[in-house]
Amino acid sequence: MSQADSRTAPALDVSNLAVHALWGAWFATVLVCWSRWSLPWRTAAMTVGWAVMFWNYAVLHNHMHVPIAKPRALKWLVSRTLGLACGFAYRGYYIHHFNHHKYNDGPGDWGRPRPGEGALHYCLRWALTPWFWPWEAVGLVWKSCKTRSQKLELLLDFVVVDGTLLALLAWQPSLGMSLLAMLLVGQTCIHYLNLAAHAGSDSTDRTALAVTSTSRFYNRYFFNAGYHQAHHLKPQAPWRELPAITEELIRQGQHNLALYVEPSPIHPGWIAIVAAFRRYQSGRERPVPVPRPAVGTSGTSS
Image 1: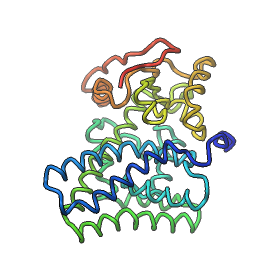
Image 2: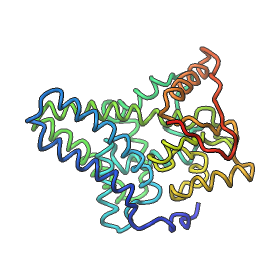
Image 3: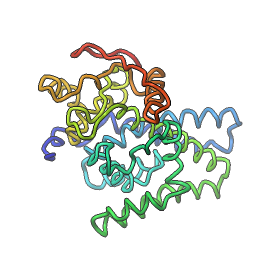
């Protein structure tokens, strides 16, 4: 994919940066106020933090493909803080994610579900792996670093994320443990998105690489993340262009309409469909039929 697609993106993507600034405000508030808060306030703060983290993952994903801040120094800084916001060593997750784009959830994709693996097991396994069983994942991304600079950046990103967490554990153990728990819950939800976006996809079929969700709510607030087939075919296209690209793919017959759905990945009904699909993959039951809107319409579900 030519980088020409990304040249239409602004030097500063204000909407994405605003969402990331929201995380910065949350994090600063937690650092300042944690010791004064009672248990209910701390619980509420971590609940808000989980939601903000999940929202920031959409920003992190956009930034990996088309930087939300193009000035070199700002791009470098935002990469580090986005990694911290989501609990991912940025360069490691970048390499892992582009491996996913290379193999489209098929053979060779490091994040592909194991045969017969249920949805909850998959999400928990990947949420826990970077923290407690990191060597396989770290080894894969380390070997894929192409330059000494990338290896140094990977090491720095682990220091930023793990070092911050260790510092908080030493300073205020309750805050450090709460943040780790929030990150684990958030990352479990984030890894679910991969299952939702590829339930029924086929890495060998260019018309069926991913599921498209037309949910207005999801696409409005998560930067058109629902247009996943278009994203896999044109990963360097700015997020604002994905709806138009999707329409063009449909006109050209490059989008399998069985993977064009109305519910968003975070809709309870779609979560149930994904869980049932994984049970079907393991041979335990038949899949739940996926509702599909008429082509050319926009979904309204959340």
